[in-house]
Length: 94
Image 1 (cartoon, rainbow, N blue to C red):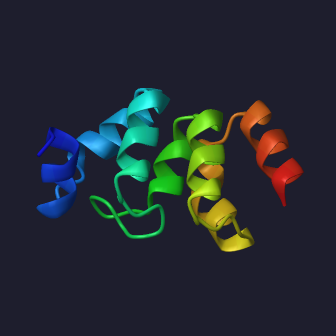
Image 2 (spheres, helix red, strand yellow):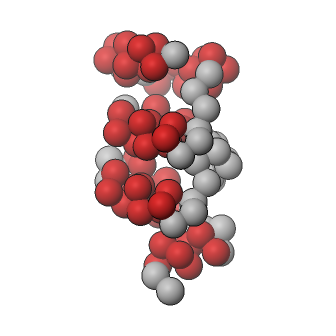
């Protein structure tokens, strides 16, 4: 069993969140392809929150593809951490 599969089985999300925050979208994709939830909380927040607050547009798109929901509440929760570019990108997705 791989490290990714072990993390998922043990509900260990730290490396997944770290991959999102560090723009390692190949690793984010591997986690998602192996069954990591795009919608459940990881370390206190949903994965989309980490992607938005770290301006990781690639992870945002991956998470949306795997079922994450981008809605007004999510945007309001993250709004203090937006760059102008992130806000324009996110509003274009709604």
